[in-house]
Image (tube, rainbow, N blue to C red; front, side, top):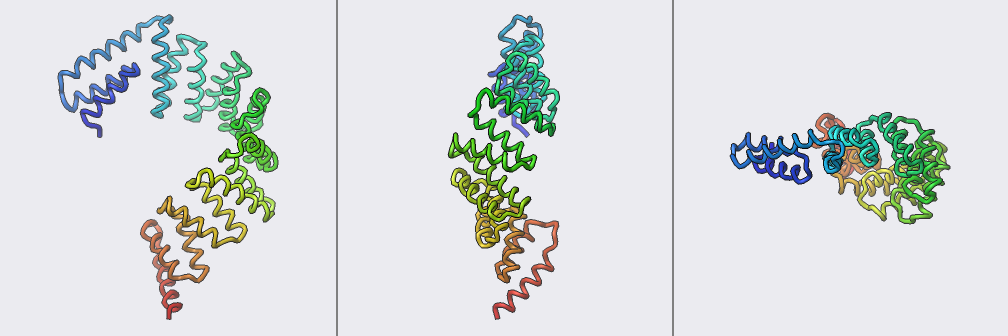
Length: 326
């Protein structure tokens, strides 16, 4: 619960960006906690500004800009519904306010309201059919609707305008990867790496695609190629847990279990309470007949995973560890 001072300071922050409705609420909350008469003029100021804005004419450019900036602030705060309301108010006054339409589309995608977002992007594409940012965002919205063919068409249309844009190439690669078309996906990732040799996402996604290809074809060499890519990605972002997990899976698929455990132990350094990784390490040591070490990991699991009973497993492992030590 916020204090009197915290509400007051938040109110000043909202006033600084001309969001007087939010500022008024903050000042009123502050006053409710501590009835300080010096706050009343602030509340009245906000009310006056709200009335002024409400009565503004359509030619009031400053008012439109305030609505747009308030929408952007709501986006930063993650309040997408409020952002859309601000953008809509701005668009009502100026139907060709392209920035407001663009960011309204982004807010709608954040709420999974993809069809409405596409309507925003189509409006913008009527104004400028070659706007690659809009084509990319429309592709993202179509992907959210699982309309992959139309999404691919959007990205390819954008690539015809800017053929060396890594973001578009990555998005196309991801779509083909989701389709199970690993050959084309990898080809797009390779195009990114030709342009940007240190693009972490391209190395990572290529590594994922190769692993998935290995699982679908049972080709061992795909996992080995995947490991090379994942290792390259990890040189660029060594503490990325998702990449480390993918590396551990690839190592498991080629039978390098010792290396897999080392990788999993690295993950535990970054995420000590990861139950899946703990369980995988515990089972590795149990299956390797290293019972005393297995006990340590199962005890950690028992402390963290209170919904699972590990007592039977622990009893057996302790007994086996004692027999081995004799």
